[in-house]
Amino acid sequence: MIEVEHLTKRYGGQLAVDDVSFTCEPGTVTGFLGPNGAGKSTTMRMICGLTPPTSGGATVDGVPYRRLGNPGRKVGVLLDASAQHAGRTGREILALAAITMGLDTARIPERLAKVGLDKTAARRRLRGYSLGMRQRLGLAYAMLGDPAVLILDEPANGLDPEGIFWMRGLLRGFADRGGTVLLSSHLLREVEAVADRLVVIGNGRILVQGGKDQLLGEAGTLVRAADPAELDSLLQSMGITGSRSADGSMLVPSDPQTIGKAAAAAGVVLLELRPAGAGGLEEMFLRLTGNGHGDSKLEEVTR
Ligand SMILES: Nc1ncnc2c1ncn2[C@@H]1O[C@H](COP(=O)(O)OP(=O)(O)OP(=O)(O)O)[C@@H](O)[C@H]1O
Picture 1 (cartoon, rainbow, N blue to C red):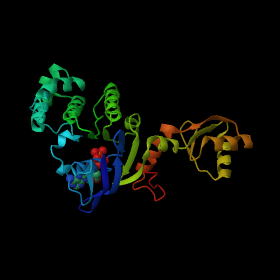
Picture 2 (cartoon, rainbow, N blue to C red):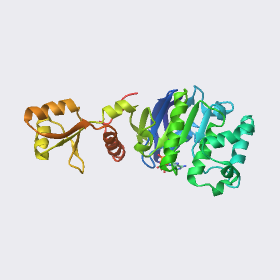
Picture 3 (cartoon, rainbow, N blue to C red):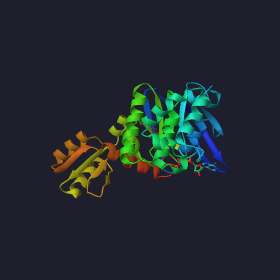
Picture 4 (cartoon, helix red, strand yellow):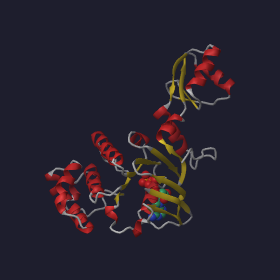
């Protein structure tokens, strides 16, 4: 379990992280989403004791990271896949980590294989690794001590589509066995398939957080009419403001039943009517994060 309470980080006059609170429960994957510079890495670094917070705090299983004994056995961390000695081989990097944690190095070949790094890759120096290979090694490194908690900053960076699919399976399996995963990304699509909960951050502040299914359910309705002007006046009469997509459909903050009934009563012919789901969530994500601090209406959905 990861508990983050009122974490705040100020760099000079800039608030990089502003009063951020959330919890990651065992058995779940939490997607930590936000555009570049939103404050994801700074938050994760504070959770891992690498950056001292200006105020607030974070614990893993009730203990601040810096006070965990043998932390690699409790929390697997991947913040920067390139932050290893470039002249060491993949095998050496894992061997040093195993020795530091008091683990048998015999587990290393199996762990390398598990992340898709073969014997040749194991013998290659890190400077010869692609970014995707570094991420794979970083995941093996994070999971080497069999921790119950994983904290991963943009682990999909550099992975090809097959690699992203593989990583999702790995993290889903980890959480399904009771593990806790905090996973950051600047792309909703990247985490949507694996996350149970989403925490969206922009300009250092949490803009929205909640269960993925709930957020998907609240993402609105997609509706397309044979005559868009008729739909516009119907929505106007209902006091609903929608946003129009390039294909002429409207994303409206209402449920399909309400819209369908009103359209039928008004004789407006609909060609499409469905929950907006992931597409709507992505639009909401872009709207929230593209909006600076967001407006005051955009409160936290739920905890
Ligand atoms: N050591 C530092 N000194 C000064 N400012 C910093 C420092 N580290 C981060 N910042 C600033 O804090 C803000 C948040 O940065 P952070 O790296 O946490 O964002 P992020 O969401 O992880 O972005 P990205 O996806 O680009 O990695 C940015 O404006 C960044 O410039």
